[in-house]
Image 1: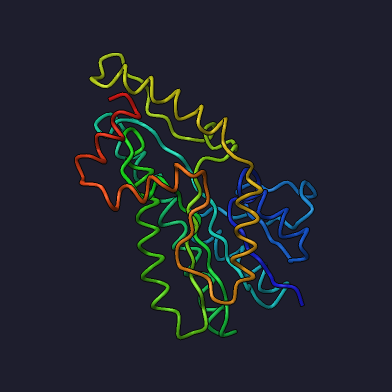
Image 2: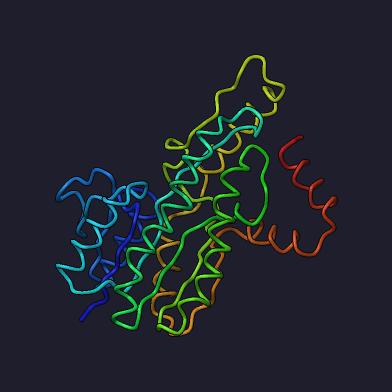
Length: 266
């Protein structure tokens, strides 16, 4: 029997690439989105809003009823957010955490009882290389992804005795439509950060537009699923993106901060 894979946020971008790739490899894939269009993908789609507990329960129940199990959960649904910390509405920050952090946890909570019963399962949380560092004008996004990184570590230890593996995959910039779906704090005319934020907003969007092929992420995810003893943390991105994490570990704080400020022209 092929493994049953459950992927949140599979209607576009990295999630869709992962779902298509695993489907082509022979996995039984269930992708999710808030408003799935039937027949629009070669894999099956179910409705799921990660910020709605009832929606999560319904989607998980639907797959369990149809297949009897979920072997792999890929927590991929996420939203971007940009803006100076001072200018960004707190409500927008909370909404971002509800999707990127609490949403992922609620899906995990819905799937775990089934994985414990079958005494096996793999949970893969998609975070971001941005979660390893506080990036200017992306601080809330960095924080939400960094928080999920730490929860992955804790959860891995908590569920290991049940035969469940928990893995984190942090991608760099990939060519997706994430920029279009981001919450962008407006560039306020009276903002102290007006010029620098405007410059960096254009830079962030350019990085996504010139990003790598999402199939690279899909290939990495497939290798993790097929690995009988995967690591806890994986980074998937360009050399400099991954090297930036190494630099953060070895350089003094102020030196690393200066490098980032130079990069972002601050």
